[in-house]
Every structure is written in C-alpha cells, then in structure tokens.
Amino acid sequence: MKKSVLVLFILLVASLSLGSLSLGLINVAAKTESLSNTPLSGFVGIDVLGIDLRYDLGPLSLGVATPFLMFTLSEDTGIKTSFVISGVAWLVYAG
Image 1 (tube, rainbow, N blue to C red):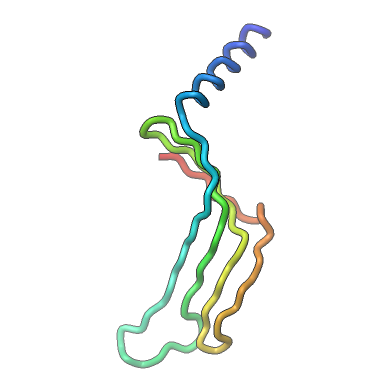
Image 2 (tube, rainbow, N blue to C red; image 1 turned 180 degrees about the horizontal axis):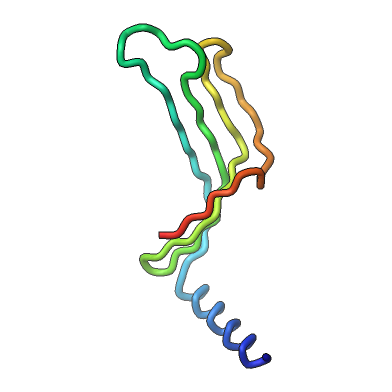
C-alpha cells in the first residue's frame, strides 16, 4: 500500500513539474440573427463569463470551467446582468 502511494506521489510530482497549471477566464457568446431585414423580437444574445482551471502536459490539455456572470441582450428588456452561482454548471474537457 505504501509503495503504491509513493509511486502515485512521484507520478504526480513528475507530471506537475513537466506540465503547466493555469487559471483563467472563459467567455462563451451566442446570438440570433435575422436573415431578412425585419427586426427580431425577444431574445437576441447571451454572453457567459466563467473561471477556467487548465492543466497542460505537452499536447494534452485537461480542464474544468464554471460560469459566474451572464449578460443577456433582448430587444424587449435591453441588457441585463445576472450572477450565476459558481458550481451550478461545470464544463470538463480534455483534448
């Protein structure tokens, strides 16, 4: 048992020394458009800002992100800002 814990610890230290850990912001935006020249009614766009924790080891990237702020744009109500409770939604990625 102690040998397996030691091996896992050595692998963890080696991967952290060879890779890079970063914390940053992500931004995801979506919008709707009208193909004709008629104005849209209702929802026009959404923009989500979040925190991203990423680990890079060579060409491999592993990460997790969570949103914390959302902006919506509507023709009916204009621009509205809403806080999102961190941890409500998670995005996990590898590539």
